[in-house]
Image (cartoon, rainbow, N blue to C red; front, side, top):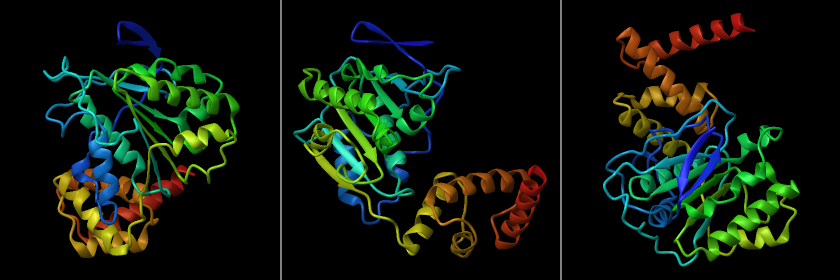
Length: 289
């Protein structure tokens, strides 16, 4: 069990996840989501990061990730966002980048704040036999709490009540704690059973992420490739878009694998190379089955 010291108290948090280092505000393709991204940047404590936080990890089931600050700003109070409410609710369909933006907010805050927490409820829900809503107790002492996939606990009374009480504690906190909660639909549309929790989620800013159109997806793939130091010609990006599942999570994962394979083969990303990769990939899947 890993320990994180928060406001002088030792909190036991089971951890086995890490923030993706490549999920930053500067490599999120904004498209029609400029206002939402700007609001999240302003809401998260700190400024654009100059150093990264050290990850606390353990071999226990996925739960909460806490990043202590390693910058020299650690003793300064976190800078608050411009919104008057300490919580933001962010929603959008799968592949719109909600998790990317939560990770980016944590990275930004961990450069400046004492500690931040990221909790993916979809993973916590799958480990219900080992994890408990009690893990939310005390998180209001952190500078930023990011809670992902709230829809995963919809209809679970203990989790809904725990989130409701956490929100109240954050709202009444004197430490300036801030929270970002993400889900796949609006607060009224995800099947939550607790009306008071729904109303709390609507108290602050409710931000919606728009789905990227085809041209924006191509541009987003090229932006992600550039941040990996990879040249992705437009015709190759379009080929991927036509022949692979059309969701950004799958496409970005594919781009990572292509990056590794092209580096190992010392080859540029071309359509013939991608076709060979696809054939090898299908053969591996067939043999694995």
